[in-house]
Amino acid sequence: MAEKSEIGLRQKLRDDFFSGETNALTDEALLELLLSYAVSRGNPEPLAKKLILEFGGLDGVLSSDFDALCRVKGVKSYTATLLKLVGYLRANETSKDQQKEVFEKPQQSLSKFQPLSDQKPTLPSKKETQLRKANIARRKSDLFTNSVLKEAIEILPRLPDTEDIGMIRAFLKENLPFSGQNTKDRYVPYIVNRLFPDGKADQAMRSFAKIYSGRQELRDACFYRFCKAEPLMLSIFNDLLMPAVGYGRLDRLKIREYLAARYPSAKVINMSAQAIVSSLVAGGLARSDRKIISFGYRDPLTASLAFVIHSEFPQPGMYEISNVEQNQAIKSMLWNPDKLLAGLYELRNQGILAKVSEIDRFRQFTTKFTLEELVEYLGKERII
Image (cartoon, rainbow, N blue to C red; front, top):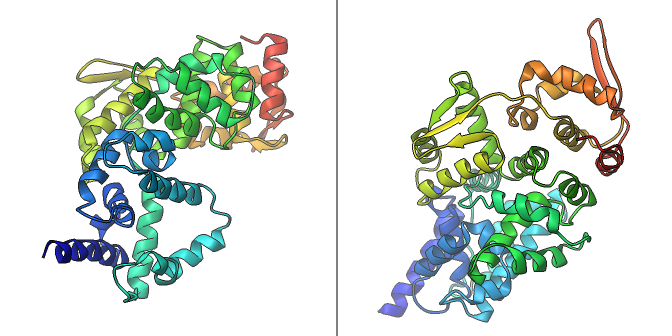
């Protein structure tokens, strides 16, 4: 009877997934389904919950080190292997066409992982579309439960002079200021994936960190990359901070209420709300006590503005000034919109921009550097 119950449970996990049920598309439910193919006996739900709590979400689980996974009670080497394999495949999708094929023919692409039943489920086109949209939406707006931005900003200037992400990971494991090795292992992917999203420790960020170590310019650059990696932060700015910027304060409870309404089935709302506040404070954009976040517009620093602009407009060329004024990532830096134009002219005066012009309706600026060339120029000219 117990064996039949386990088979029924696992079959229900698959059926709910193929039916596009909303509760089957949460981090915990997806991980539970995945673990059902590695854990041959028992209910995979407790282990899924433990892994989500330990690593902060499905992304954290799939991007964690093999050894860190194996240190979690209940995770055997073959279970960790499956998780790492899925993480690798997820991070190395080769084309949009391949992604489309997976969603359009899920019964074919997943049939090889169905050892408990020979029946191949069919997926109606309507449910298929819902499943695709739900997965895409989840990937774009995941909750995150750890900030680690303060620690990342502090350790960034000390990174070894290499683009090898493996060496960077090893350095972080040895030098992050946490006593437990499990904690270090858990936080390494957060730092690497947010600050080096292209899979290499780019020279521009590492050099910028050394030039502006301990300064607001470095906090700005790191916070910018953090927000780009965590789309939820941009939503928080749009929906909560910007409407309240005139008041200069926001009740922290509003963030929890916002997250609870946006993710009604999530069980990590308080952790995520804390991580959001910690990120704002670490980036130097806000102050906070137990109840209130205090913040307001600030003047853009020359090097900070240059770093963000050359990140958003990476190819040297001519751009509309309105593209800067309306850019969501730039708005999220809480720079005073009335000071952005003056900031562009200052970049020109410092030799960073080739040209800024306002003739009739034509308002344009011209960049001449790539991001790496910009940072080299900032260091050489000592623009601080």
